[in-house]
Length: 124
Image (tube, rainbow, N blue to C red; front, side, top):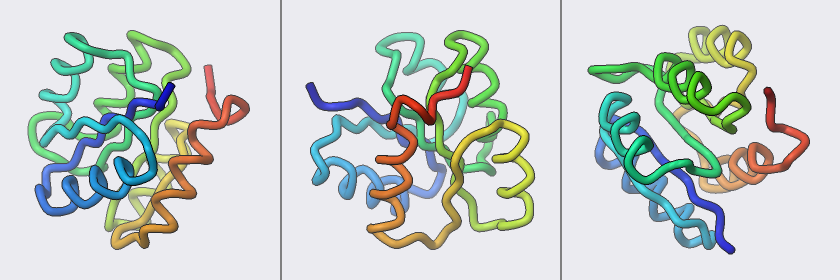
């Protein structure tokens, strides 16, 4: 059965590109524009096998989204992405999630997602 991924990014072109790349890899992918919408969607149709979220977004940022999702489901696999390398490194370390720096390559997205979906990478 294909893995499901929720991609959350307030930049529509980046969100759609990630959805296209991951769909081409065989994943079932849903996109949301901000953390608040992602939480609502997760409550309605979740859980997802992986959440890939931008760090800085309106309404609820990536770290806030990850924290709330993990309150619901401890150990939920997540990936944090951002164009701000310093902030990304700090937040990813605090949340214990893999990170991906924007702009990223197709291969980097594929590899990061595959790595995050490995059972041994899932934290409790």
